[in-house]
Length: 127
Length: 150
Image (cartoon, rainbow over all chains, first blue to last red; front, side, top):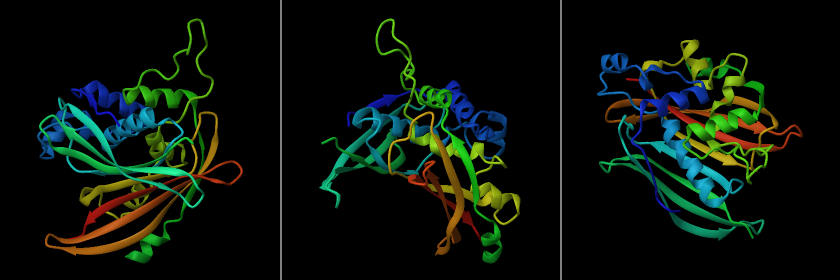
């Protein structure tokens, strides 16, 4: 999968995503609240980052090809972070039904090289 | 305590995969507009693929508008302030398109404790299963929340 760069992440991005999903958790828009809870600033919804990864995978492999996606939220994505989405193929195999599947390891890094999300995906290959 | 957790019943509800919501999610996830006409003078596609992550928001269509973990929080069975999201796993049995009417069942699937150097952690695994109108499996989501117990 070609690397994809996104960002810098803005408040508008997080509000748009909150509106789509209906999750208005104050950690994602209320700076005063976030500081009162001991965080250095507003951070992105984990699903926002995971969602961009999902879209990047389907844009590359085809909207119908994603079979599995597993993500772990490793570190916060802060406002202003630039993100780099990448995935490498770890295995190509045939299923018992004779279909060709490809496993990938996925990583999202911030501009300062923190791994903010790690995961794996399986895509089907058109035959 | 565990018996109380298991007293919370599964919740089943209908999930209409709306064209406008698929477009809104795609735009919020920084895609190009999936509704743009494919050719000059053409019309917008009448059917859109559902962005994979949109499945996690299906609970917005449930009667109580809550993810399964929030149902445990509301009953005082889990302390939200001590809970973190541990991971998320999707399995798509086939693609999902706008216009579909799916049936969703949310349930607590597994609970286990783990002793660590920082105390006891409780792992709560939830399963959200999507079925087609014909009852065929379409998608399964496994969500793990971790509660610090001590």
